[in-house]
Length: 421
Image 1 (tube, rainbow, N blue to C red):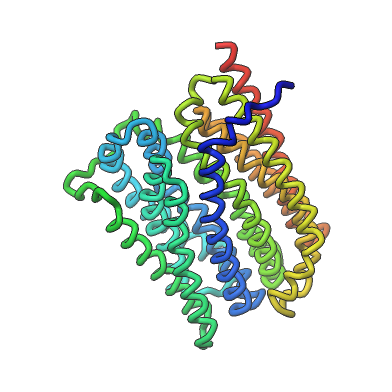
Image 2: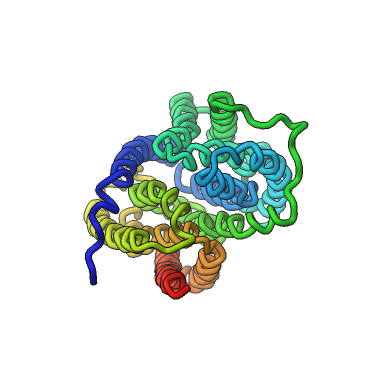
């Protein structure tokens, strides 16, 4: 096999990856601090309930923009002057879809997750945050990314997370009688402040509401694939918490959720790399060049090297996290050992999905992720019934590796097809 041209990763992409990795490192510290504060504050049972409900809201919220933020990323990366025209229909679409999805979220939580015992105001605060505020906040972040301001985009994305850290620390030290409700209100306020900062700090304002319009049929078809991949992309690493809250005792679900949050944070360097290469792949991916082929091969090799090394490291340091989370999370080390099986699968699945999206095949990405979700659902039901709490990390590993194998098979099939056309 011909070795990749080193210029594919020693130039602007490598520098962008380093800058983005630095920002994502800051994001990792913020997320870690928030996770530790919230997990210790709530304890395994309430944390399991919160993680399950919040995960459901996050998954539904990814559909709120109906893929319009990916359309903005794609169009503006090729022609920045298209920004205003895309925003004219992206903003009302997000508000309309988000409102419908908020109602769906409330219905599901009250019917299927009633055992969590969370109050209606708490559920509303979490739902509004993830189905309305965060999707709107993602639009300016996508615009910065389209203009190859990757580090700035991720720094902006870190803002609500930093504000959540402040909220979690405040509730932790104040010791209110109902910490879950108090944190949920801080959760809402953090996203509201971040959205205000993001919109007012943009060089050009958003179009006024009187200029808004609904998308045309062609624009809806253009965004439909992106909408599907948006919801399926987050579902594998979010809906497992909802399944855990449904299938396991809430304390076990909380321990599992803590472990998966730690494991998920370790994939941030892969996300940094993919965010750095996405604008170039969007520009060049529709017509396959030798340089693009080399870049994709380098992405695969780098992701494999990083993820397998990380899995081995996490296996050995897993007991440290029991100390960090506290004695209530006894058994976390055991869960994390099993979660190490999923680390390479998660990283490789993220890379394959991003490549397929940039090569103009969002439906392929959505397809393998839907199959992965089906595998997770069946595996979780069967394996938790057989192995108890251990069954959830095993189900996650089965799902992630299925998606990895299918995703990269689709990538290479797509590249072969483009070479022959």
